[in-house]
Amino acid sequence: MPLIKKQESFEIVNGGNTFNLDVESRTTSYRIFSSAPVTPVGNHSFAVSGTPVEGMTFTFRYLADATLNSPVVISIFGSTMPSVLGDKNHTITAYYDGASWDVQFIPDLDQNGTLPYDVLPSDEGFTAVNPFGGASPAFANADYTSSGTTALGFRLRGDKRLEFRGTVNSAAGVNSQLFTLPAGYRSGRDKTYPFSVYNVTDTQWETMTLTINGTTSGTPGQVEVSGLTSLKNYKIYFDSFVAYRIDE
Image: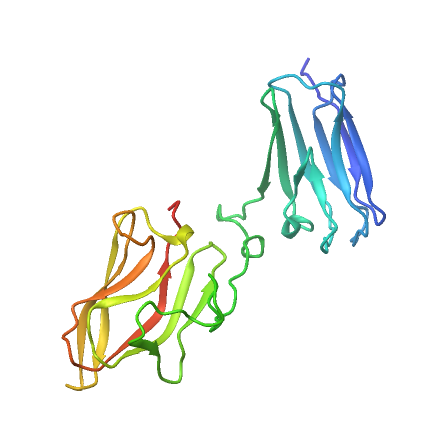
């Protein structure tokens, strides 16, 4: 005769709630649901009652339709569920390693085996405000400034990469450091990209190399330009240029 594990259910409600799971219970599989769409005004927290032992594992099937407005949260054994998953089906696993709980929130895949687009964080809008400090893009070399109708802008993408767009002008047209990335966005090694620039003096396009320096650089994450001819006026066009995180 097959072994059937009993599943218990917990409801997400308006007022919030605290749920305690008995470590002595033989139930390890749970369902979290809402009887209707709900916007909680109170937190929901899940905790264990008793002393857990290493290797103990709980599984939750989340099926609630809850809009989680900050600062309201749902937490599982001390880990906060991403608010974007409040109204999306997903699976939660909690594993006790003998010292703490390792909680994973696993969104459902679609029929193509990919995450639904609305689960992923959205890209921020482009802004002239330097996202890594300063009221405006802080160029390392005063010779380089924003130019043209599209000023140099930045945005943080949903995948945590930093994206650049706009036009930079160099009156002298020299090889130089443009600006410095935040420490968390330096790459583990030098990354180079061929790049087109417009030579205003000769009225023609030329190719240069744009480098995001890695750990070999004196200043982590500095962006440099090479391949330019001195004493010429250049415009550098950034079109969705991306800086990578240090852990990629």
